[in-house]
Image 1 (cartoon, rainbow, N blue to C red):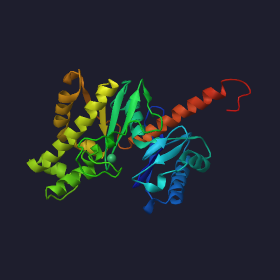
Image 2 (image 1 turned 45 degrees about the vertical axis):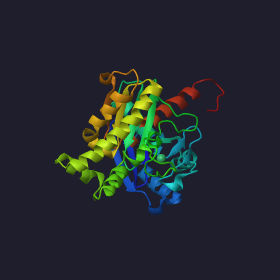
Image 3 (image 1 turned 120 degrees about the horizontal axis):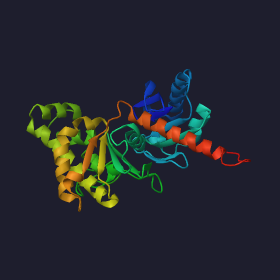
Image 4 (image 1 turned 90 degrees about the vertical axis):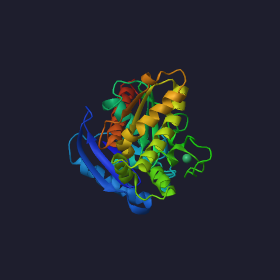
Length: 309
Ligand SMILES: [Zn+2]
């Protein structure tokens, strides 16, 4: 079972071992994000999935910095109620079975590496462009969590030292430019109305000012990604999230920046792919993490007699 617990929607799905979503459910996240109500919503969704055969270990993707080893949300600026949430233990009480938790963009990365745009690629960066910007790092076929679960937080890399203030307390973060919120903000600064979706439509129908907003987003993304490609010596980037629908509008500027800035990397060797797992990559990736956890627990149980697991 995979769960994707977001600020606006809680999604749940029963996922087969080949990555097919057999059954999916979604509910709005309770307003004001009260934790008990969110837990109740999750419990209801799990009960609905339990009516079907095969519902096993649960994986949950959560927004913010998730301490995967301890199962705790360390920091969640966009859904404040989640900060400090002992999600793994609480959810495993609710589900009465093992639960594994991770960051939502990490789950998307796992989904893409498993059955998506990076299937068979051992090392890649996942960037999710939505209301905010998230990311995940896959190295040697495994998620890289870092010391505190912060790895891959590309959204808060500085792309403009004098840029707009960011929710994280810094300014000029990638998230302030290359997110749906960033596009809408830049549009307002140019005296324009509209959300990222309508501005993308305008750009496609030949509106140069709207097109310029997506170029700026693409450039900012390219600056951040080029630095990451240098640091990690990888060359594949998967772009997901709602804003990936406008990747065509951002990609030329994104590629230009990578060509200009990535060190000793031939521009033709940089691979940019649009995420392929839709519509619920977070659910698919979380379920994959649950499957991996299940195998790990099984191996531990078989490890030796007397083991209490
Ligand atoms: Zn920030």
